[in-house]
Image 1 (cartoon, rainbow over the protein chains, first blue to last red):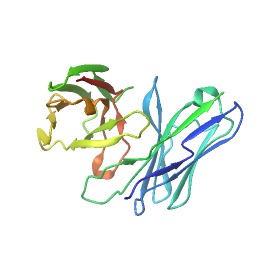
Image 2: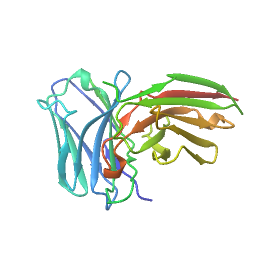
Image 3: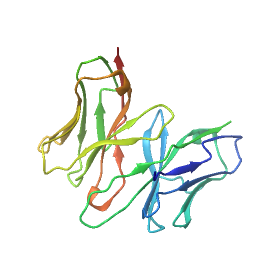
Image 4: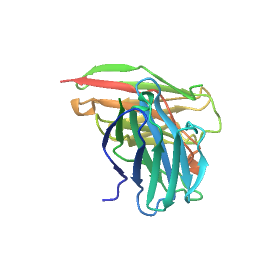
Length: 116
Length: 113
């Protein structure tokens, strides 16, 4: 049963601490997305990668957020230093971009981050 | 600027009734319009999707109606069931390139037994 996995599922940390969230996309998918969900802003894109190269990270606060794909099976989202306003659920999604077809994004279960 | 506008914010329907959620978009470059269903504590899951070359798509009790000229699309849930109680998001993207999804703000649907 292919699915996107995310760790940790829950994270509580104090303001100023570094937070790293990890995502394992579905094997064979070449596109990975990071979304953030809050009550105020809804679901918003932070960044996404294709074939491990960043395509768009305009939704990410550059001074404290960074996203990488060290290899095809791992995507990371890091916040340093974290702030209370970063409290949200962070979703990773993956999909296969293939010429001539419309492709679904599969979402992971999310990481619920609370910054005190 | 919200690329996709969704209404209503919340919806209460009796079991067996029809639930209707509406969305509107501005960018005519969008060519893929999915609806996602999200249960508490879970990630969004694709429910049904449509491309602009058709005006309607039906899968079981779920139907998308698409009006290209009005730049609107809607989700109809027939014979609504308590198990349908969830948050529904419409979205739009350049699906042909697996681009980013632009989400509506969501509709919290409650189906009373």
